[in-house]
Length: 538
Image (cartoon, rainbow, N blue to C red; front, top):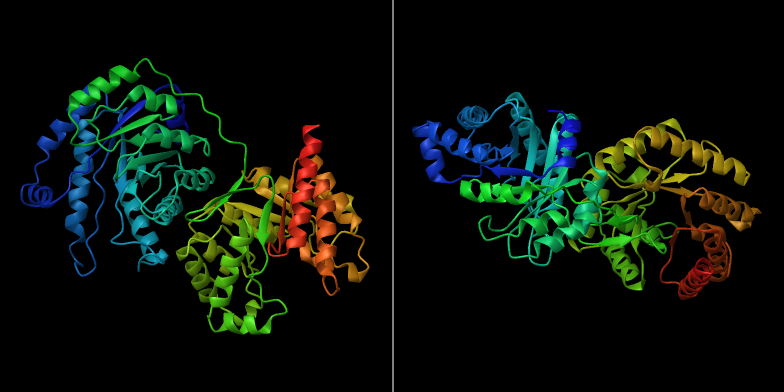
């Protein structure tokens, strides 16, 4: 079954799945010492007879380090397992191979590296596809970084296989590592997955959790209640937006039969995703509206002492800037480590890990080395804004590849190898770049256009930037600028910045990389937004 065929089915009916998550010493005793799958086939046939649509295999377990040489035993167990599942079903039965959780959390919350976890998931995916499963399921994952890595690994092997990802949450609608349902939906709505799922490790308002998820994604949704036999109200779950009801293998077949009776006359609920745009970190979600304030101070420009700290991997100053800008009202943080020729990837990796551990705001990586940029974003557990890409084939192809693999948005500069002098040329260049993004499946609402701000000291006509913002706004394109560039090398910078920001907001500016600690500039922004809101209401 293709992904498109699977989607067409989910548009028309509610599906029931059963996860064959039987584990423990007893399981391995029976399957290694007494590898007879007749009882398992018999049990699975009962589920299918009662109306089950999807059977999900037991999570594939590779031996832990130190058990080298025993891989063939584990693989044989799982290969026989899937064969038994296949014999239990028919040609219409969907069989998904279930990825298993790594031994511990990934860095920085644990010690497992991205490369090791990615390779584990990649091997599991290749194994399952060799067993001719219809799809892959990543279920019961309580950490969004592990879940994202699983999705990346699966898609590195196959773009055609069905992929179902599921995050486990608790009573506050957050995962064990602090990720809210909304952040899960926002990040994975960009990624190439077919179904987003929720399961629960503690009591939670299931319908509220599903409703929250539907605000941020168009993907199909599955749900596995905390206790499959505890009188779940199926109709409410369907109305909230779930299209697949998941059960564990221990569920009584009669429960499935009764559930089928409830859902047989129900159609998938009509849903409407929020039109807003958001950036996320592991624990934060920040909306673009009414204005995205991107803190500019994690940048050693004109601060040689800070550049030296960065070189020596002393990030205390940057962490203080991150916390300070957060308290001053920033929505996200621009990350610029200055002279990249004296740095290596470990500088970026360690800083991003430090910020992740302190539950920072969403990050906006301003990294010129494209390999460092790609490697940093692949490990980031949120939806980020890439800063930035010029309208050149090399820059666009790099940004598109990163966004396809990791989700997120990008800043598109109104320039190619040169800076156009007129607003018309800048707008046309931006439109050319957006068309290239759209041709690769990335919608224009994921692009922020930078109209370019040059220093007044160079005799730059700031009206060109204002005109560019106004024209792009009329085209429905979001805009962002580096505000402080306008006053570079001048005195009275706060007043210049505040005045210019007011003009740009009146032209429709969406976001700015700026200093949230500048009270005058922040007051100018708040007044301009209030005035703009009054105009829109009128």
